[in-house]
Image (cartoon, rainbow, N blue to C red; front, top):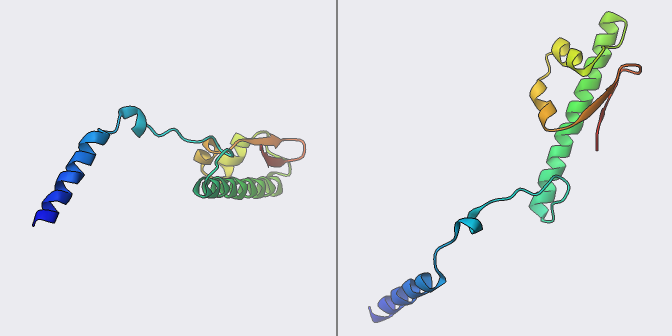
Length: 109
């Protein structure tokens, strides 16, 4: 019984002496994309890159289908998204360029 009480007193003293966590210590500041240093952060960056590359491929496929249907490239990326039914929400995560002359969508790096 005595050792248990001693351990509880030591734990309480340690908790009291270290103090509470400040609000500043609990703030989470995300690392900008591509600047991660941890293994988990680098994995998250690769996953985001992969999703952007997959959406780029879907956009290029949608442009090809638009050209096959209309015999001309779409005037802009908004037309591609509207006509294909692809989700426009993916544009918030990645930046793309579209060249109406060639009908190619490219992911900005």
